[in-house]
Image 1 (cartoon, rainbow over the protein chains, first blue to last red):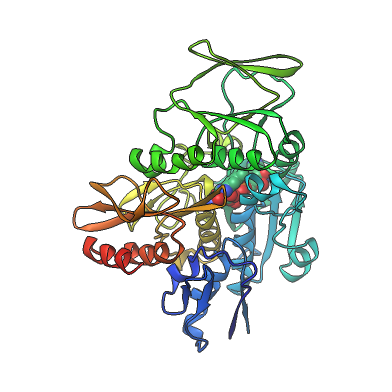
Image 2 (image 1 turned 120 degrees about the vertical axis):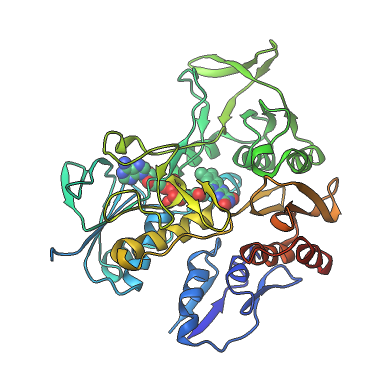
Length: 63
Length: 398
Ligand SMILES: Cc1cc2nc3c(=O)[nH]c(=O)nc-3n(C[C@H](O)[C@H](O)[C@H](O)COP(=O)(O)OP(=O)(O)OC[C@H]3O[C@@H](n4cnc5c(N)ncnc54)[C@H](O)[C@@H]3O)c2cc1C
């Protein structure tokens, strides 16, 4: 599984961080950064929730 | 076992997320998505923001091809559901009877009308794409614009209208704007953005009449004040779109009354988004939210519960909404009724501050103006029933 963040589209709502603070973080630059890129199947539902609930549709999950 | 058929009524955010979640969960039965608007599902928040200020295209979430082939949806746009017969598991839409095994009600809300408003050209509400196109065409340099309601949508329209060069007056009946959403003190703090940007906001201003001959000419207040107007935009909230459910037996009380799992009291019937009123177990309170992320979250959950009711999960969520005015972002997480509201960072008379809301020993809410970093850390903390001290620590860390 790979998570992509479109930093041109992200405006730093941080909804993803609210769902998984160990994976996403809003940086000082006002956009979201990944804290890890290692995911297992157990992470899938949370990551899909993060994609679905992103107000700017900046996230994409592959695989 | 009858053929599986998931029917989703309302083809906007909650309805779309419902369809997507059902397929992702491996559901292979039929799906019908019924939507009253002719449009493919599109995003509403931009309609009061950047859509009004430039020639931007509507943001459609998916194209028709991906809905029909990838998600294998029988898409019925321009079709309003007119009746639900929950004991027969049937929805009537556009003359067709749709027998369902699972149903997601996602018909959202419509703009509240100002009672007694005459049908004059130049008087608008803003809920959908067609409304936004009309409002956009009406705004421009020097256009005398009166906005009724200083809530979030009214405030965003005011900010956008100013950006087009319009002359804007905002009327608010309450003594302070946004008191219900963020509390009186913070409502006043948010309204400070209008002041600092030179927008005329008049509180305790009640509209007595909107007048004109054919097209609007003026707005008259109950104290006799008369404001000349080329355009009037009424932004006084939204009403859940439950009219098609009247007489169906589904309990209605300012929305569709649901249980914790969003079940609407009949087998297989779930509701999601702006229309759903449900007991949120995280707060022990019944809520109906008109927030983007809630609609997205509930759409997915309602569909998963509708296709697999045995495993139905509760909707436990910390409310979140945002609003963008004059290039500033307001974010609120949690609930605003609190024992104490404390400004923990920044300055309420400037364009950046963070306020925390306390209930007993716990943090229950947070409001940020241009405070993107801490707000969602606080949302995660509220979800864990974090203490007041924990919240103060997050705020101090910035
Ligand atoms: C201008 C605007 C700006 C906003 N900005 C923000 C923001 O900044 N932040 C935020 O958090 N939230 C914002 N929101 C709120 C957010 O857009 C809503 O919470 C969200 O759209 C709710 O989604 P929904 O699918 O539940 O309902 P809706 O989006 O209301 O969709 C319901 C759909 O059902 C259709 N329908 C109605 N009746 C029937 C019927 N009988 N049969 C078939 N279809 C029917 C309607 O036509 C509509 O397409 C904004 C809303 C608006 C209008």
